[in-house]
Amino acid sequence: MFQKEIQYKFSPLAIIVSLIIFLFLFIILVIIIVALFSVKAYLAVFFLGFLLFIISNEAIPNLFRFSKHLIKGKPALILTEKELIDNVNNITYSWTEIKKIKYQFNYPANHISIEVKSPSFFLKKETNSYKRLIMKLNAKYFNGTFSLKHMLISCKKSELEENLNLFLKQNS
Image 1 (cartoon, rainbow, N blue to C red):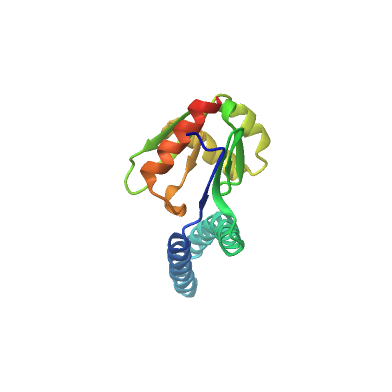
Image 2 (cartoon, helix red, strand yellow):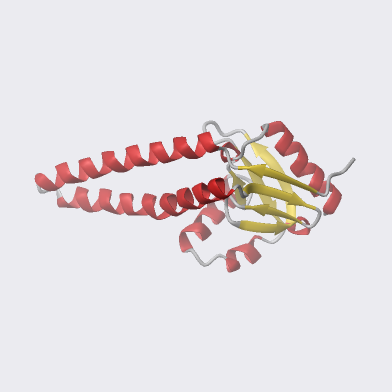
């Protein structure tokens, strides 16, 4: 029997591990920047500082959002009859807008790619230029406009893929 709604929660372990890795990389980069600054390697300091800014600009807001959803008990992903609500990427898709959903084996970055019928519609809606660039790169290199990081979702990956395709087939 077909369910009207399925919710998947955030994986606490994945969020904690992501936070630890981010903090470790952040501290290492800061130490390298301080060391390079002390030997007056200003170009390297500028480059690494810029890299640190770019990484922080994307990672910090996402980690806070994931943690907030985890604490409040909000689901990472909600499948309904009308739409796919993706709280990982903060995007809602209507099933009629989705062309194809496919599990991509690109170790170590295995993910679920979501190919939409009109990528330009989502590109126009996105105000963050960095996220727009990522959307274009996903479409070009990973066969989907959006990618869903299933490691952040607490569930069996085969069950998630099966339910995504079932909802897509039933509601598109």
